[in-house]
Amino acid sequence: MTIKKQPMGPYQTNCYIASVDGKDFIIDPGVGATEWVLDNVTNPVAILNTHGHFDHVWSNAELQEKLGIKLYTPEGDIHLLQDSGWMPDLPPSTPDVAIQGDEELDFDGTKVKFRHFPGHCPGCSTIEIEDAMFSGDFIFQRSIGRTDFPYSSPEDMKKSLQKFKLIPYDKTIYPGHGENTSIKQEQQYTDYWINQF
Image (cartoon, rainbow, N blue to C red; front, side):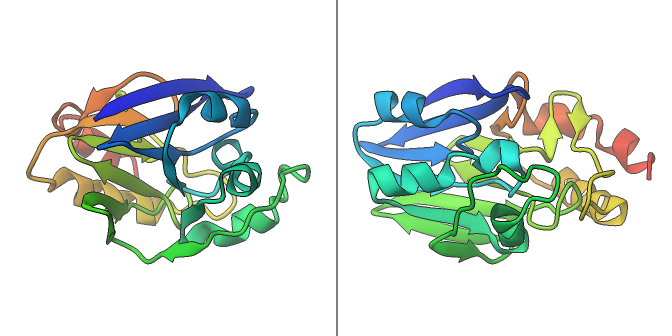
């Protein structure tokens, strides 16, 4: 697998293209991502959202139209794609597939695993492809997603961190902002964050 990364927009939101066996998966196409994505895919098969915040989904609809591929979004955040009160200029998008909690998809032999970690927002999820975990705004390098936004839940975040702590394997984490880390690296700090709630 090869992974391309490009920070997008005013919040430098990481957009990723994960390429596996000739298939390109576009993850979190944010503000202004369309041109970069079009320049860097050869066989796009899906657009994947870790969650529904505007800086991660801004280019969803444009890429759906230009590439003719399906959009996969966690069910709990679909309303954020249609009406973002804090970002009224957001181009609305409609997912082709609503992801239900922890769900594994199979794209012609390539497994894509959504793992639900609500707290930052209702649908907040990570996406695992082979040895990579794309963590959106759930886990960052030595940090976690904020829980003071509309629809955030500190109680849910605490439960999600407890769930994350129990993952028995290691993978590289590719977060929605900032630099890469790993599951084992961030599990060292999980108790600290749990105790903040």
